[in-house]
Length: 249
Image (cartoon, rainbow, N blue to C red; front, top):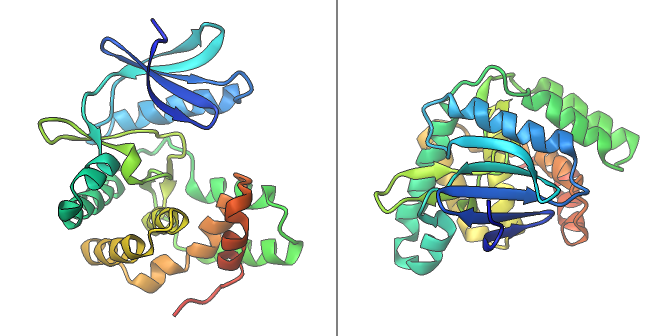
């Protein structure tokens, strides 16, 4: 495998293209357990009806851990949206339809979303009273077992020339309540500064999934608290505001 052609750069990882391979190489400081968990998530999701690149290998490449999948040629949905703003509504509808399809899947061996959120909230430096309130809210939420992507945004959707959507990056996948996944996507649009897109996304998701907007909003303090663990200073004030607003109109 040749690590020459870079196709994506993310925090602590770089993705290369070599022939029919996509090679995601992680920095040496990246947790080996997290890398293996991502590969396992990917393999479990491959067993559903979703289009995901085939997992081919996990191992060391030039002394660094890497996940190797088939290379799928196409453009991300984020790029298509930027290139054709007049088709934004069409692309957003495709995006929501795909997320609803994800939530229709079952992968019983994925980690539980409830457990994942408990761990993340525990890792924050929020005061004990706030953490207790969040745990109480989380415990009261209905327990489901739907596949949740955990980072569903247009950069993780690849559309082939034939129009087939492939879903990338299953590192945050779990099984649980679909509204938590939707709340996280809504939050990502907000963090990107696209409030109009966030609101339109929420309308479409609730309409297509038959979910009350208020039900998704109840997850916002929880997903905001979980996001705090990433430790991005530019997000902290905004996320703390959402964590401390427990009732939305």
